[in-house]
Image (cartoon, rainbow, N blue to C red):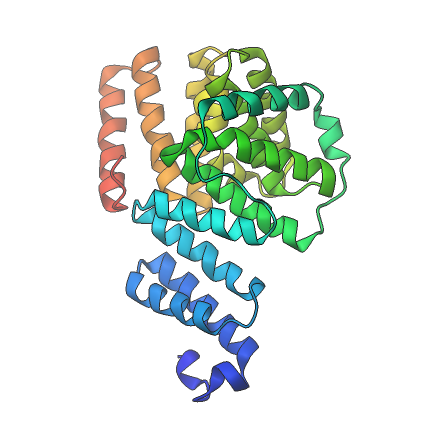
Length: 294
């Protein structure tokens, strides 16, 4: 309704209001799954934006739209393009020797990092770097699926930006992903577990802990805790992660956590078969209701 009330030449006469209205409309359309309306709003913003910064929110929504359509390569390329404009350039192709070289560097960096060191850092205030961290966060999420060898480069950059420019919530994602990368590409399980514990403590102390729990459920609990801690002690964590994910509207990770609870309970024998069958049925029914097949 608000958009219909704008003047005919609103992008010229009511630029700021138009930008805000179209961004809000695109965000609401994203929540409701109205892809056509969302795409139309994003196209209008990108074609009328006066500055690169004015396109960033629309670009982040576009990346999410591409990823939700399983177009992970396109989402990744879009993130890389935006990051290059923000001064953070990465190679389009990554070789295993490049990754191994990066891992040697990041292992040295991570061994010197402590929880207190991160907590004592000032808040990140550089707008360009905050935007870069936001897109690096998204790129890490999609690279896990489409190009895992990018993860060491991305996470190492996030850790370095944090140490140089200050701390933000995305710093925790960068640190956790760095630990996850150590697990994927090296044999240093002890360091990977240590970084996982530091990241987990930072998550629990964050005012945004539910969103961070949900975002990092695979890296921290589904991987880094499982490699060093008994599965029986981890099974009980999945319902908590499920609740955190549902609280923040992250349906996909919520269902992954619920399904992980069912599978882990089966392998550990923590539930009787009758009770476990009920949990599986409830999980499948909820996935169908939410249109999120796990």
